[in-house]
Amino acid sequence: MNKTVLITGATSGIGKATAELLAKNNYKIVLCGRREDRLAELETELSKLTEVHTLHFDVRDKKAVSEQINSLPEAFSKIDILINNAGNAHGLDPIQTGDIDDWDAMIDINVKGLLYVSKAIIPQMIERKSGHIINIGSTAAKEVYPNGNVYCATKHAVDALNQGMRMDLNQFGIRVGAIHPGMVQTEFSEVRFKGDSERASNVYKGFEPLQAEDIADIIHFVVSRPYHINIADLVVMSTAQASSTIVNKN
Ligand code: NDP
Ligand code: 8X3
Image (tube, rainbow, N blue to C red; front, side, top):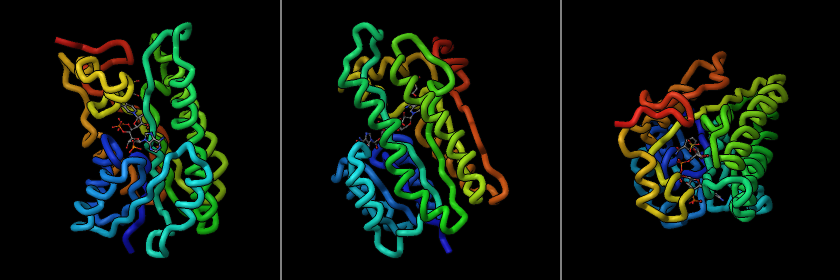
């Protein structure tokens, strides 16, 4: 039987590319996000390839998260693979001038949202003694860069939660692993810079950044390993990137 994968943040970037690739490979897909128009469009496109269901919620809304996940129709209710991908950076400011609302957004979405979604799905994985959780971290989960303070803190928290989940769920035979991308050209910087497209596109100028499809390809590799193999922690950067602050630009 085809595996069912639930992807948060499926409306753009890494999540969308992953949904597209996994649909081509016959996984059943539950697409999650806030932008309903995009969810509907993607559902139409991917339904030509596989069975698709959409869930519309903000990961910050713990009631909605649990209600939506618990109301999945029978055909989609057994989640084999959870991809905790929804997240963003909001702002890039020194700690002394950072916006408190940006801090709240990052902590609430990247950390608490990931926990709410996981909490709603882990019990059924425990019951079946099987499942796979992939947490999308970042190179920012491994190193801090100037002005990245709170975003880096949230991704360090994802790294810690990934390790903690793996330890706690080990006894139930559940796979848990993180993928930590470097700079990927998605809507990430548009969101970080609040729609300033010029500033966002400058982030990826002068070198060849990763594309969402590159990460999707890696996620597909990770989920398609035989069950006794768990890719526990994987950092991936473009060849031009050596660290968060060292990028070989022309
Ligand atoms: P995008 O901005 O393209 O995608 C972010 C996704 O997250 C969207 O689908 C968005 O959907 C969803 N999302 C954001 N906030 C919420 C929310 N409150 N509730 C539900 N869904 C939400 O960025 P990426 O694809 O690049 O980012 C995906 C993940 O990868 C993030 O966790 C990010 O931190 C991480 N990452 C990105 C890197 C990069 O350089 N791009 C590098 C390393 C990690 P919607 O708005 O419809 O809700
Ligand atoms: C996103 C990549 O370098 O902006 O996690 O932190 S970076």
